[in-house]
Amino acid sequence: MSYKIIKDKDYLRKPTSPVASIEEGQEIANKLIETLDSLPSGGVGLSANQIGISKSVSVIRARKGQSPVILMNPVITEVSDENVIYLEGCLSLPGKSCNTLRKMRVTVTTLNHANPIPFGPDTNPPTKESVYDDVGLLESICVQHEIDHLNGKLMIDEGTKFIKQAEKKVKHGRNDKVIVEKNGDTQYIKYKKALELVEQGWKIL
Image (tube, rainbow, N blue to C red; front, side, top):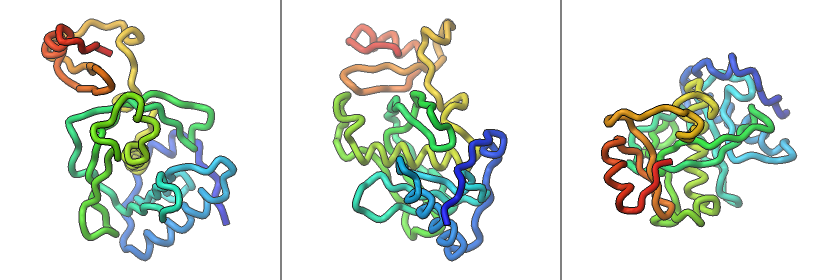
């Protein structure tokens, strides 16, 4: 039995509750995988609240031919300094896409894995050309996207969706943080530091 994808933003913005056991989490994960399998367009990730189950379980299957990564009660415990701007979509927001600001690498602890799990790009360092071909980076972005779902946050929400300066039409204070880019590398730094990097060929996004 597959489940209908929830599109109600008010429901999706309610944080989920932890599962009490791996057995409970696995039962939910099976439903998520079955639902993904039933979708004509597939999908690289799905969270329990997207099918109407308000529990902290997500599945990620960015790597074709490999078993899905199941995350039960996931918590991001480490993040990289490097950020990446990534064009994302969402099964609960059909037809919508937006650029998001994500961490390049994250480490996640879960109920169902004994050790923390690192996620990050396969290409080191990633280049501007490799960003959308890098399955490891896709997996890292998807993990962050799904954990946001479990915490009641959507890709279109403030703090996740990336809006260019020109769209904001605001002036930056010296200690405000901005994104700078050079040759595919990005940094999220204070504006006063960004001004120094502009002289070295970096561009404020």
